[in-house]
Image 1 (tube, helix red, strand yellow):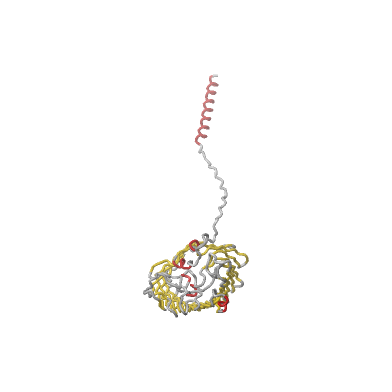
Image 2: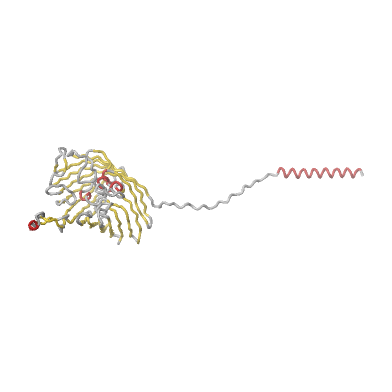
Length: 410
């Protein structure tokens, strides 16, 4: 019996030891904590509200112009470029944004400078909503819609379609513009259709407010066309036309017709030529007819009667350019021109022969700082009548200029 008690006690002790060992094993077992992997939800990218082709740019064109005539006035006549005499100034500066998508395109550019002020000076000032001050800082602001293959319609304010030279000086072989280019529209306000008929032939049709004006001066609209044919990659023929009434509504209609023809030839990689011929005709404002018999009927009437004229006054331009380029370091360019406007339709001189002037220009460019450009130019203009101002408040037949300019474009 006593032996049984010992056995029972031994059994209880063994049972307790077994239980403690099990509990110890559970306590010392390494605990593994698993962090649940978060579920990543696919994020929908936010659509970019701006066109993928949107590009921003800027341009600054500075100059110093020395006039050998030393005129009293600071401003030169018969030009819109480098107009300030013996003065450092800004010819043009602008910032722009442009885009070209598959079915829509456009450009907006805001500008300032002496050429801007000169070009927009004829804009009307009588209206409140549209006047010279409100529009002169708009270089271009248009929207284009693609209506068919290689066919676009643009509407708004855009560069004029006439002439070989651009308003942006760095695009031209010479720094100043030819006389012919200073008397054609730098900008137009309207709508244009552009189409590529073949790989070599392109056509434009314009409906515009008028001859370089945003604020319209009459109820009529003007028309313009451009035909561009590339015989080869290096030889191109361009023909530009304009037709429209250029008189305000309170005057008799004065319809203007204009044709500009350009040949551009890149003879070699380093040698290029261009020639331009222009002819314009505008209906005269009025005609005075000798009719002395009316004075006998009514003594108040004179011997001349003012009637609507059927006469068209004409003017002509001819310009030749050539440019020599040495690699991407230097460029030497020449321009010879003739401006013939005896009836003073475009250039008013109040002289006997009107504005009949020859021009000779030589420009030397340093190209190594591209997109920067440093330029030196010499200009001589000779007129049949004394039309250029001098230092003694008189006029002379010859004007000589030296111009230094620098520009950069991004």
